[in-house]
Length: 259
Image 1: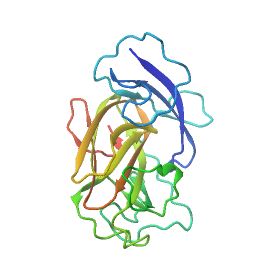
Image 2: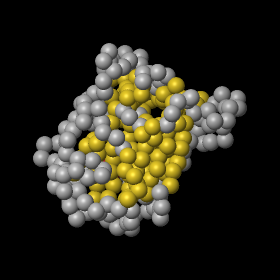
Image 3: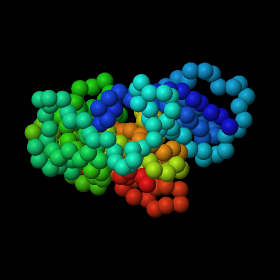
Image 4: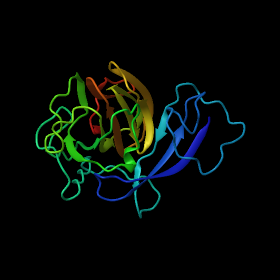
């Protein structure tokens, strides 16, 4: 079985402290072990064996839980209450939407997502590197479930006239109570990417003339992970929905707590 192990450092806005993420992966057969979903990934610390054993087809990416900085290198278990860590508020003086929109509003949900809004110049065909960009404003939502429709409200309090050419980065906790394989499905118009603990899982990027979906499997162990969804809207209608399903279970709009 082809395996690739490395450590990734990611900032977590909602946990209030820098966290260290340890990720070990089991890649699908026939895929690039450094790039399972067509997106750039971190380089391994050590080279993989020259003649690895074949990996069974359909083997999902394997993600380990986050570890807190300064603690011994052992997985951090979920809290006794199982509640996600509350979202960190935006920086002092940052613009927050002042009214409800289909992408979120001004009310912080400790168990939900914080959305960072980026106002873009026309002409983009793929999601820019949002990690290196400065947000123009913020919003909050409990779920990511924007059905296909026209976007007419803009972002009141940030830019009420902005109805196209923008991006949103959603970040929230993903508390896993039972180790299992999961399928994540992302419906988007235009582009969207889903990451867990900074690792690309679903790549549905690109400009579209109608909503399109992409699905990918992942193996999640018990613990608190970080779910990130990057979204790009150029012109026309919008759509952004994130679904998940445990093996043998029923698909649902993905919550931030998976029993």
